[in-house]
View 1 (cartoon, rainbow, N blue to C red):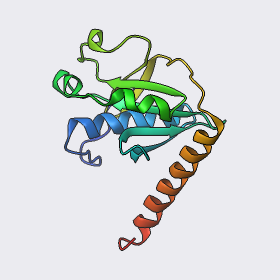
View 2 (cartoon, helix red, strand yellow):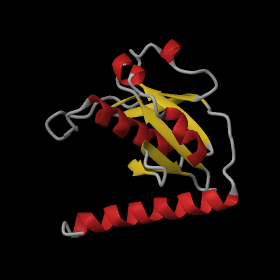
View 3 (cartoon, rainbow, N blue to C red):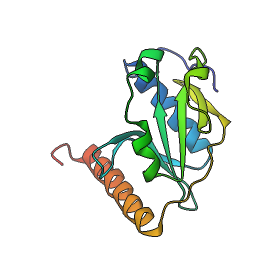
Length: 152
């Protein structure tokens, strides 16, 4: 993880979960994965981060900013059918013993992160991969266009 930049030139989201998302997104980019935060799924769920790798592999990362955030979560297993690998992302103070075994783990802060445990790969079916990849591309393109035209 990188050291914090100059506080006079750096702005951060206010919420701890958003800070964690930013650091995880930076770490994913370092691994050549492009992230989309708050990615809606056709199942009605919304992934904290979905990332697309150079070979088309799809990762979902669920960010947990504290114990209460984790214990209140009853939906995380619903993400498993929408990705090739599933990761938890937490900060260094999080009690990682609470997390289910056999999943990926990313330790992060607002400025970066590190993959501590690689998630096992469970390849998506080709039709599901196509649908998820198209939804990812459309979401990313709409967000990019919204930066140029707030009416979108």
